[in-house]
Length: 285
Image (cartoon, rainbow, N blue to C red; front, side):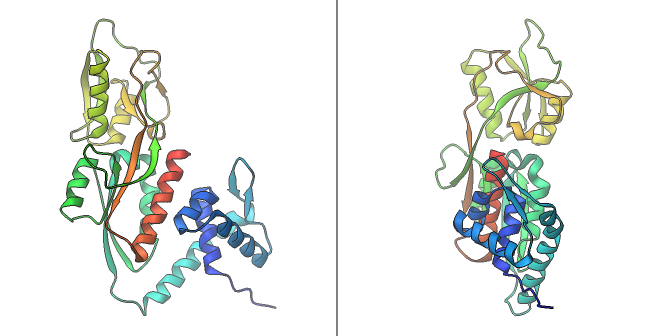
């Protein structure tokens, strides 16, 4: 029986496609071209003798063989990296900040991606508001930050432009003659400040009825019908509806998600490329 050795670059390409549901995002994560990723997947499929990825003009998904192979593929790449780590230098430390208003429900998957990327990386993750994280970045306490755009800063790389809307719990109704009840994150929060400015400019009286420590708390308050909130659609729990048009609330502009980093090369840069592609995939899903 002939032993089938696998091309690790092809296996990595398969893992990226599986995790990001996109050949384009996989190419961004690997800092290569979509054509190169496609060729690696085809080479891997020929080697194993089965179709692993089903691709149409509208979607990308794993075949049954691809689903069965995915976990083994991850184990293979991780074992390879651990084997090489024996001959490597001391583990590189990297501190990454991720804005709570950016991560949202994708945070568990993002952390899992970070912690399994490379055994040689010792990763510190800090979650907080964009303003606080950027202050830590400026003090060189963090090597990279993924955050919303902050006023007066133009040093970041735009990863995606995210849409927002005004949302409330199903069945919620405003009380006639009373200020609009609004659920927000605590200061400092760029989305909170922007929502207040938009309502003030539109001449809509409003009052904070809930101030939470993060986007998940705000989403919970909206579900509990404590008021409306400015949220990205991917942050929404079940049963929450868009009430912007119904209440004639001001349109919220798309907000950029930016990567601020001093990391230029090496395994940490590869990790940031993978993480950036994951954010692009989550925002455009």
